[in-house]
Length: 333
Image (cartoon, rainbow, N blue to C red; front, side, top):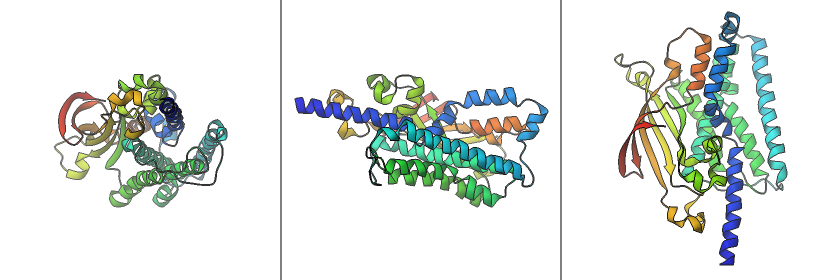
C-alpha cells in the first residue's frame, strides 16, 4: 500500500510538471492568440481609427525595405526574447542532459499534437502576412514568413531535447511541420487559404477534479484542460464548390476533441480516479465563418478579421463520439 501511494504521489508530481510544461510550452502562443482575440481587436479599433494609422496598415505594393527590416527585427526581438524567457523561467530549474528524444505520442489522445499543428500554422500565416505588408514577394513570404512557426517551435523542441526532465518529441516535430505544410501547400496549390485550423473551448467538470493538472481557473483551463479544447479544420465552401448561392464567408468545419482525460495516458491514471477511466474521442461537424472573406475596405477591420480567423465561432454541431454515438448540440463552443 505504501509503495502504491508513493508511486501515485510521484506520478501526480510529474503530471503537474507536465501540465505546467504545456502551460509555458511551444503551442501556448497559438492558444494565447485565440484567448486574447477580443482584447486585441478592441485595441486595434481604439488606436488605429485615424486615417494615418489606417494607411500604415495597408500592405505595400512594392518592397518597402524599412517595413521589411521592421518585420524581421520585431520578430527577432519578440521570439528571441520569448526563448530567453522560457529558458530562464523554466529550463534552468531542471538538470541538463545530452540531446535525447521522448515518445509522448500517446499522451492526451493526441490533443497536444493538434495544438502544435494549430500554432505552427498561425504563426507561419502571420509571419507571411507581415512580409506581405512589407511588400516582399511571394517566395520570401513562403520561405521566411510561413516557416516562422516551425523555426520557433523547433527551437523550443531543442530545449526539450537537452532537458533531462523532458526530451524532444518526434510527434511534436511532425505536428509542427504539418502546420507549416498546411499553409505553404495551399498557397502553392490555390494561392489562397481555403482550409484554416481553428480553436474553440468550453469548461468541463474534469478541471475541478484535478485542478493542479487541468487548471485552477478559466485562463489556466483554456490552456491545460484538453477535455474542453476542440481543434477544427474550417473549409470555405464557395472556394471548393464555386457556387454563388451561398455567402462567400460561409465555411464547413470538422473538429477533433477528446473527453474523460484526467491524466496523459489511461494506464497512468492515479488509482483514486479509477472510476473516471472512460476517455473517448469526438469528431464534430459544424458551420463556421471565414472572416477573411468578409468584404471590407478598412485595413483595420481586415487586421481584426485576420486575428478572429484563429477562432471557431459557437454554432450548432453534430458530435460523433468514439466513432459510434451521434448526438447534436444546439450551440457548441
